[in-house]
Length: 365
Image (cartoon, rainbow, N blue to C red; front, side, top):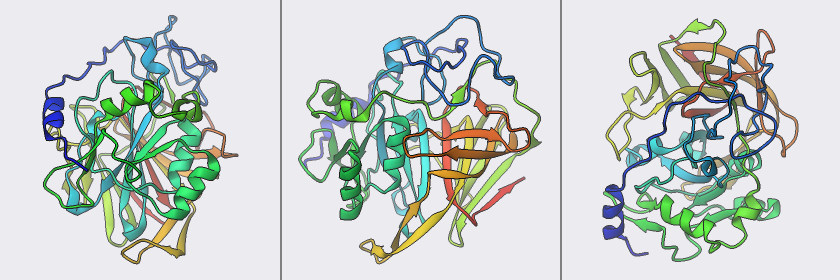
C-alpha cells in the first residue's frame, strides 16, 4: 500500500471545528437532528436541569452542535492500537467517544468514535485488527468499524451478524496509508475525512443502511447537578499482573488525564495529554479462548457485554458505584447509581468507556 505522505501532510493543516458551548437540551426518546435518543434521560430525571429550548447535541458525548446534521451522521469507529511499542497514538483527543477493552497478551485496544466534528483533519492510528467486542459496539451505537485485519472466526461472526465494517487488508483503500516511525504492523493510519467522504458518497455500498440510525450510548444533560460522590484524584485500573493504566483528575482543566504504567500518555497529533470529561468503568465476565490463539500464541478474549453487572463512574473529580444492564444484544446499555437506582446522566464532554474483566483491580485515591 502506498503511503500518501503528501496527502497526510496537507491534512495536518486542516483546522478543527470548535464546538460552541451552549445549553444542551433534555435528552428525549425520539430521534431528530435537534434531539437524540439516549437511555435513561428525560425531563423528569431529577439530576438533570435541561433548558427549555432544544439544540442539536452529539449523540456520543452530549456536546452542543452548530450544525444539526452532524447529530444524525453515521459514526466511524476506528480500531486503534495500545501497544507500548507503538505509542503515542494519534487522534484519541479528536474522538467524540473512546471505548477501551482488553485483547490478547494482556494489552488493550481503543475503539475511537468519530462523528460530530465536520472534519477530523488529521490521520488517526495506528489502526489494528478487529475483535468480537466490535459487534457489541455496533449493536449499541450503530457505527461503521474501520480496522486492519482480523481473525477468521471474528470476521465470520461479523458477517453472520451483518456488521458494517471496512477491513483495510481486503483492498487498496485510498483512506488507509502506511507511515510513521514504527515498522509493520504498527504503521497503518486512517484518513477519517476521506473515509467519510466515500461512505457518504455511497462508494462503500450499503454501509450506512447496515449501520442503522445512530444511537447514543449514554444519557447527557447540561447544567447537570451531580449527586454527592466520593472525592477521587487518581484512578488505577489493573486488568492483569502486567497491565496497569489509569487517570488523574485535573481540577483546572476539569478533565481526567490518562496514564499508562504510571507514565503520562499524550496524543501524537497535538502533544497534549490524552483526556476525558468522564471515565466510566464497566466490569464484565470475560472468557479466555484457549482454542483461538493470535500469531504470538496468546489466547483471544471474549467479553460478555449482554447481561447485568457493576461498574464505577468517575466525573467531576468524584467517584460513584454504578450498575449496568443490557438485556439483549439489540439493547443499549443502561446505567444506574448503585445506591439510589437513579439513572446515570452525564455532563457534555468526551467519554472514555473502560471495559474490564471481573477480578480487575480498580483503585481510587
